[in-house]
Amino acid sequence: MFKLIADFSDIETDTLIDAAFEAMRSMPAGLPGGLKLPPFITAGMLKSMPKNAFVETFVQSFNSAEEKMLPLITMCLSPYLGRIRVDAGETRANPAPGVLLSVEALVGQADEDWLFQRMFSLFPDWACLGEALKEPDAGETRLRERIAGLTPPEKEFAALRLMSTHRAELIERINRETAEKGTPMEVCGLRFLMPA
Image (cartoon, rainbow, N blue to C red; front, side):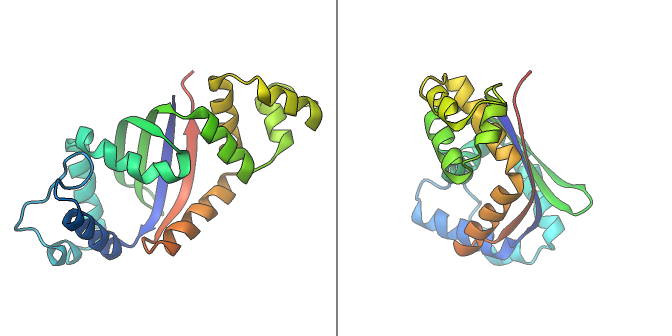
């Protein structure tokens, strides 16, 4: 279990609105979580709102219907975190200078094997792994032996340590991939917290 906090400095709201309406047209049941918009709301109405007002409206909607929004957060995070279950979430509009939107997600369950393998393939940092496993002076041979016997919580902790240490690279990768997919948004901050 861990908490992820993502801060966005900018979101291309028109593109996201178009994507959301396209998704609703292709999914008769609505968006994940059973989210549906009233028929009188159009993409043009939402696009006419100033960006800050749109984000504030989104935050109010999210926080008043959190349970229905959690599958949507899960869908957005899964490409980066694998098979996860998001147990709680919260959003804030304009929480700090330069931050348009902040999203918190409590990940109650993750595929620790996938998450560790994915993060270590992206960031093969043996020194960071040694610190995460409380063997900062261990060499690569010793750490390879340790990897084989890691418990799921140890794998999750090591993956989070890799993500935190290589946060700037991860942010750059997310921003690049979302731009390539046509849903540009600028992530400006990422934090990963584990319960004490």
